[in-house]
Length: 216
View 1 (cartoon, rainbow, N blue to C red):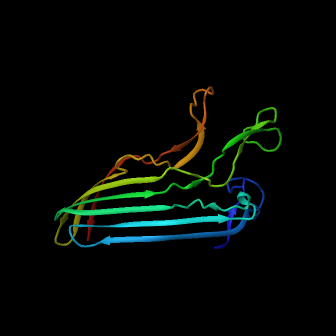
View 2: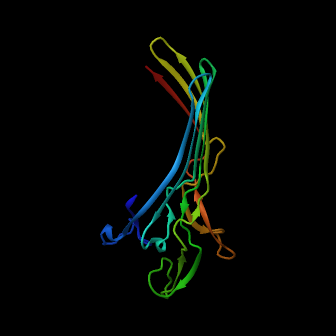
């Protein structure tokens, strides 16, 4: 792909600068390659499917990341999903699905240094401050994402309609998949012996659910 755009290092759409948006981006090239496999079973008491994607996606720009290629933010080497549906009885159906995805690329500082001039997000009253040193863009990987969902459905067929009760569990083994990451301190209650660590915020732990459906 040619002519893709990306924000320049240090630029963001969140910044309330008066500059036009096109001064914050740069055009470059992109590559995306991959292989998708899909296997499905439609007959019998046990049905379902298996899907797998092996892929790679990168970007390259004249000045961003010192002109070197870097992984795109949506690059995932492995993406796997398996779904199994089993009719335990004529009116009882069990189902489960498991998903796995390689962690997304992420940009992290590898060191810090003190600055006495220019912009610093952590400057003190003397004008000095601590500046993060970033070696390259998207050089780190976040944790792999995986989750198990399971459900049981009770079906009752009527003459003119079908009704069913479904009891489900989202994230059955309570995998803590962070939705958002930030840099914090290992011990925020004190500054002594505290180290800078990457922390994640999880939004959806194990979540039970129940639903009722009428199908005409």
